[in-house]
Length: 216
Length: 213
Image (cartoon, rainbow over all chains, first blue to last red):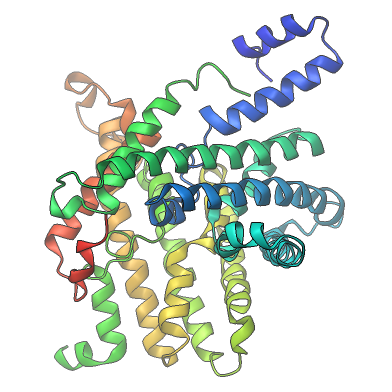
């Protein structure tokens, strides 16, 4: 980990390094994943559902929540699968298949549990859960997690949660903007995806601009 | 040629190239379109990988279409696609390790690339193998056209190079636009290409444009 302003700042607040250094590292991973290294705005993951769903605020928020929950849990599960199953047995080439099956199975399981125990939550989140299996942000979080050196279980969990939160923030911001510009006059060819991409580009400039502050 | 254009496969192949282009008409597969297009070399390899995957997944799904139970068809399709992606991944790792280091995770993400799922579900699960294969090739080439168009602008403007080679005299008069190779540049370029694409192509279902916003 580089010695960067925010981590030094945190280390100073917390006093001596050691245990607090661990939590400072987790906080840096979380903030970086959520904001400066935003999975949607800088890694372009989950664009398809982002473009399709971000028309309305309420649905965007519901889908965003479901994404946060699923990325956090699948990042943790896939970390365990990678560390204890595929790596020791040299089965890394099967990881794509195993990860996608884990994600599909987890989403199915969550859907069944929520439907059984919390019908109101099921009606809020339920319709979005099947969509999530094919949301590339979920598989992307698991794949990017493995490219990071030295991530343990806690780091992977926090990375998953931060990435999910970043996606939620991006889609909610976009939904707010799209609700505002709905009545505006836009050239015919840019309607729909075109203007949304331009606005996303401007949003991305805002997020990328802070990338020198937090890094890891 | 005229006879070929009348067949199901020929129609699908040609339609997918520009008129019903998967990227700007159907707005699918946008993630990798944005992510890999800052270098021409990465773009071309990604396009080849996707072309291979979509064509052969379509063929396989079509061959098996009468044997897959409807309830589990999505899962089976994902597994078929994932198998081809593993082939692409291993090939890339073996022959272009430097490129694999840069775009590795995005190669894995071909599995969830909605173009492939979309073609398998919408076309290959109902049509004969040869037509499905051609449909896949059409979708892959249509996707490649858009990516190459974007990379052709982003790499020269952002790095002053093409395929990693300096353009002649570029240092003398060109100040590189770093933003073109950063994420925002990708969004702006795709929006521009989508604008040009939508303006120059006329789709059969143009009437849905009114509500899409």
